[in-house]
Image 1: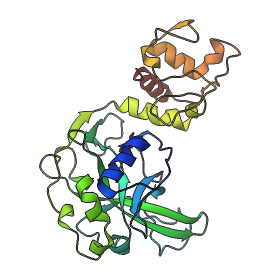
Image 2 (image 1 turned 180 degrees about the vertical axis):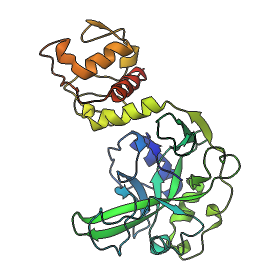
Image 3 (image 1 turned 90 degrees about the horizontal axis):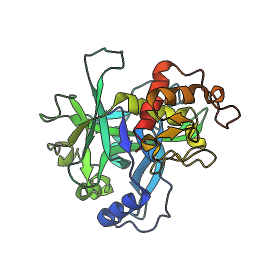
Image 4 (image 1 turned 45 degrees about the vertical axis):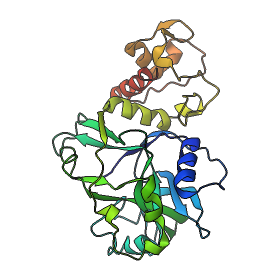
Length: 307
């Protein structure tokens, strides 16, 4: 399966790849959010073909809600953020989209967690899978649009998965269908949409590069956005573009914190995040006393990684 993926590429990188492989020229630049983790139900960029055959980049909800659903967003209970390649053409939820509404899911890697099944301790080891070399990749996707009773029209998408194959079975038995540039037109082309799944959904996938990553840093990067740090601080190459607080792009390389009053250690980072007012009264940073110890540790680990 694919339950988390990464997209940190810039608009210039995406635009260049689309122009090279799909003849993309017309769309104005978008401010793509650089994200270490994209999670189900979040909005994320996808690529579709317009009526004129021109590629279009736009945001949709990752967790497909099919067009025939009646009710609220939360009323849709089926787990539809992944679609199996083996049954996608005949599935009630995906079949119509497979025939008419294919997309490319903009990404540059995906995550799997290794550890005993049912382990909820948070100690599983995350691995990041990316393309070997610099070749741009996307995932095969299907999109839909549903008129919900609470949020109106909601566009959404799912990622197509297939058997992982020998090179990935040690990590998980399913993997997203990875499409490189030469396959993009073949997946999106409406003339192929009524056919059975093309061979690109059934052929062995290229061996990705597997890199172990820190679960603590991943959690910290997630919390950094969720608790509002991005509104005040800038981290170059990410969606954090705040201007009212210090630029944290290289905070992990600094020798001191708080305008030079503290050494830059894990302990002082945690203390500063949790209650900076008790250390340096009247500074502009709010206290985060409600965060748990593990969350403070994760935020500190993320900031230590910014070098």
